[in-house]
Length: 110
Length: 303
Image (cartoon, rainbow over all chains, first blue to last red; front, top):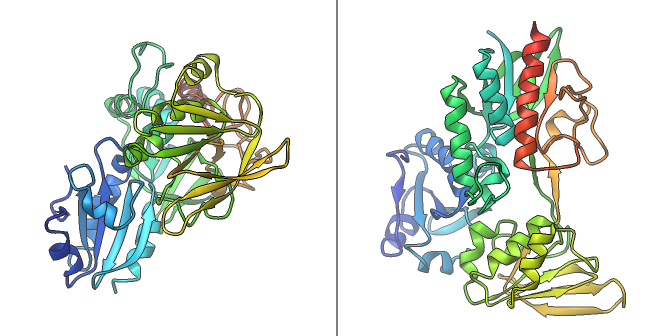
């Protein structure tokens, strides 16, 4: 039931959709078994609506896509990584409130 | 608009309060900063909630609570409380997004969150081998070696859970015996993958980009040693989520809210239920009972 503003990314299209994106991209690394991932899902949905056109909000299922989490040393979910111009701007681990994510997003969107 | 009650937090205590308040047709809603659940969401298996003798996942149980609260007309709204300000007979709840809600009463059911060790490397390596949630992060440690820190129910239960993935689990405890209940102790002692390291504390978590090991202090011998591990799972207890209300109501030195048997705090109109409240047993079953009691008290005191 995630927002239609959210894009799904995979190991195959991660470079194309995230690293080469013109807009900053927030990637939510998640899995179905992870309770806190479900807990932050509604917040991610709201942010996708609110930052539409400013920041792309993406999700990656770490079960189906093991390579990318490995590349970024992810060993905990949920992990949110904010990318701009192909570089990591901020990494947030664990379920956090909306304001923590908004603070990160404010660094890349005006 | 002045509400009768606002319930802060949609864990078991808040949702039970919502069921009782909703059924009593008290006007209000539940505020939650994430989605309903609370700490229960990180529990893979609940086997001591009455009626669910075969066990139920934390997620499923909380889903049932949520549906139940909604059935009796209580909405669950997304919002994070910044502060509460008493204004005359009422309370103004200031949200972090700038909105204000005015209500006659508040049930604080904000629960608690995991405590940190407070050692070097912990913050830096969180999400890079340091974890507070075995059910979330366990699968990243398949065939690896992990340390679980703590000696209570959570530590022992999660150590057992981690043996599904890890090839070796060290359970590190600062005393020479576990605090966990007997049934969990017996399961842990009979598990070949778990090795116990007694009388020891973690002094440092070592690693550059990923956890590589931990520095241990043996409290009896004074000996310092290094243990090579790929992950560190920390379950050393909890602290209440009550920062936003300290100074407004009486708490103990750790921040747990003191109440009477009606769940009334020291300030009129503010009630507390669940893990944020000072009490001897922090369980789903007690949280639910306190939520119900708090809602009953609200209804009684409003009349």
